[in-house]
Length: 455
Image (cartoon, rainbow, N blue to C red; front, top):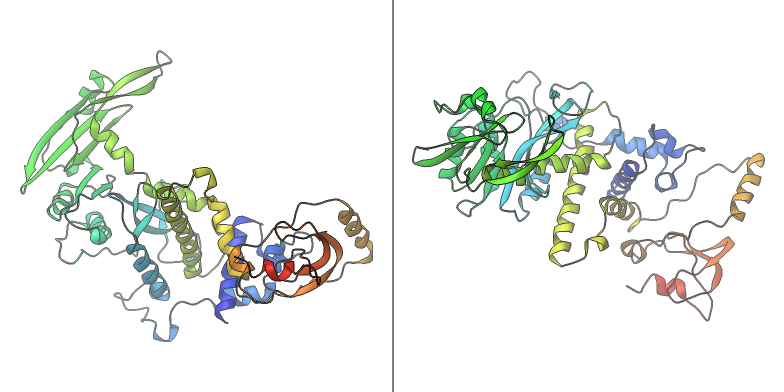
């Protein structure tokens, strides 16, 4: 297997995530054939590469009876490479830590059950993202969470935040957001001493003797009521705010507080009207950024790779492809917005992923000759009728493929077509074998040469 083969395989996989069919073999079938996949490589070759996917040397795999073995050994080089690249991305000031699930229902000791997720079975990851969803660090949960070197052991959930925050610059006003599974007094104190502010929802049992107003008393005061308490622990100022909306919620922070209060609209079931209630400032601060990981989840799910596999590491590999492409698209949008490119002129995630798939399949590659069976006599008439109906214009390949100078050979087409070179209105039978578009090729017009050499 060569690098070109692997790139074409990944390009085909990305195309499958956009053009979904129930079974993989259907992409090569006569009735449901998808040329963007079937013309890239044969089904047998695709399956062969899939079965050959390995990311580490099995000869040096640790003993399965060793309790201290690396349970992610089979994908360790891949994980380390992706993590190192994510850590190099310039970071936003506001960052959040949360869980992320890789759906998987096969046999694996790493599989977790998360009842609050739409897909409840799979691998659990911890992600560090900003409010736009860009991922800067991640870690696969393997059942053991060790403390971050140089920091105290504050429990499994707190250790995860410290490990994720190891890539955050110190003393530069960065802010971390997390939910009540992670949040504790010890965690926020350690982060503040390291120069990182934080805010998160918190379980009242973790507030170490801080007795807030009970839920019943807040409910009697009505929606919008709140109570705030401030203390200093190990030299760090902490504020706890409990607010009652439909139900009580408690937040803890080293920088945010209840003031200044603002008003928000809520629907009142009794009067069936919209009412205004007061909301502490800390609630708005928390809601501003906490959804970064959820946004990443949503974008990955839009065009996810849903190829079934019995091998747990393949599922993780396919999911990392999705996450990396979403991350690249979010970075592209950030740079395009900074360059003042209008939003309606920026590529959508669908088009961005399709362009990557197209380049991987064709740039620098020799066109794969078609291996389709000849049409049966009874079906030739159907093809002739289809040719009579005028179809959409042929798609022009992207710049990277058009200018790669590989395998752009002229061939004759039985059907004439309009030349695709700009400002040429000629009609020709000559086509580029790789780009699959009509181009003039006469002594007077050398559009096929100009098309493949003009940037």
